[in-house]
Image 1: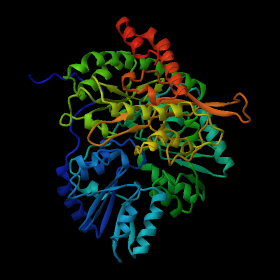
Image 2 (image 1 turned 90 degrees about the vertical axis):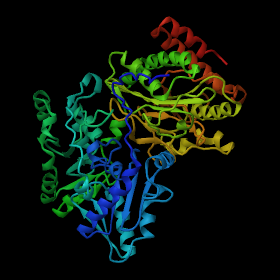
Image 3 (image 1 turned 60 degrees about the vertical axis):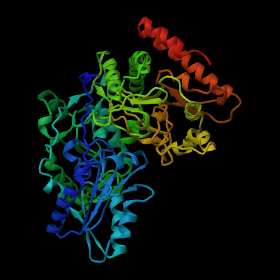
Image 4 (image 1 turned 180 degrees about the vertical axis):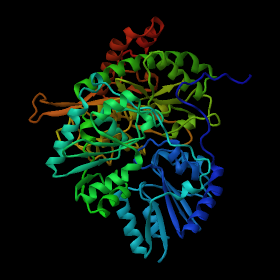
Length: 613
């Protein structure tokens, strides 16, 4: 069989981004630079100055140093020792991408970098950090560790990695565009007034915004600085009275965008951000910052100039998370459109995959092609996780030309993907049977499905947090001695980040869920080296309603993802009557809403895929 012809993927590429062999030489370069600066160690986080999940190549320092491409992690480099810290999503991936002899892997939560440092720092040593890449909250803990060891934490205004990274990409200059109020549902002036009122109520003179999605929401703009997420990398300050200031590279702004923004905010270059903070400090301002999002360099610029900090959550996070009716209407419309594309893909997949020649890349490309055929796809919302066999057990697997596997017959295939449409952001995972699958696989899938249904059908009082719901998704797995090492659900933006806070369904999800929030519902199970199972829908938190015979109104969820779940992977005997009824009603809704949007062949397939059990 000759070399296969890859379709030209419009948004996703499959190049090999990781090189484990880079670890030793790059660690040596960094150690030499640290020695030149009189430092005994340095921390290299995945984060950039915005503390976001989405980092442009210009700021992928952790990847340059170690080869690791995951969305969360940190490396610690000392004179004779180093380590890399990742969370449970990446425990398999990190061993494939990083030279373990140079950077042994540790669990970011269970074996944190602070414990590692506490065991190794010696009196008199100097540990360096880039002051813009570590949050106020994080630095406090690092200072405690250094003080206990008799060491010193040195906050640098530049980054030693940048001094030795000779082929570092240029900063992004993605164009900024206006997001119409017809889709945003609210004008920017109205949003600014709301935030200024909140600042006045907190007796704050101003706040600092470091999150590009917060800035995009506030000013009704979108950008193109990072892959798959329409973010304009920038900073902003918002005073309690007067015009905000937006610090953004002017080369990103067309004349029309500049004119529109100038009506809302004072425009300045990024180099003016620190002087702007110092100006607030010199004025004796009381400045609100989010200690979990703002770099310590931001806080120091204000306080060293005479200002006072008011530590509070980014005031944009909650209003951005609670979607208005226009945003919710857009999300529903986007999900119906996306579901039709996904059903087209599933029908195609069922015809092609059992022949045994389909591979992970071809499946990802074909799904993107069906989304492109909607005519309104702006981007995919993240690199499609197309996981066959053992690759499906890597939670955030990214298929490359070297890792690409044929999709085996007789095992589940996991595909986690999403789309960016102007009216909404989608994120869906389906696990698909390829040929006949074994009894154990069906059992595992059904246990995951039970957890998914438990979240979807949950009723809960106002004030309930995601942490309180997380157990519902796991309890049937726990009864079987199983679990999964990621949260059950994350927030999703409105043509913004596919991972949005502050809401989440997870053990760490301490924010009360509120009507209008959109969250994913995605329990899973991943036997290492075998296969992965995950089922993901997006859910809207619905307003509190009275229940028959109840005493308190209860919130709930509205499912907006409308794609069949694979009946061939379900063991009906493990489902309760109520769970079967939910699944049948869900499939009836999928059939009714999506059937008219697909072709005749796909409609026949859909009838079969959604039959009652």
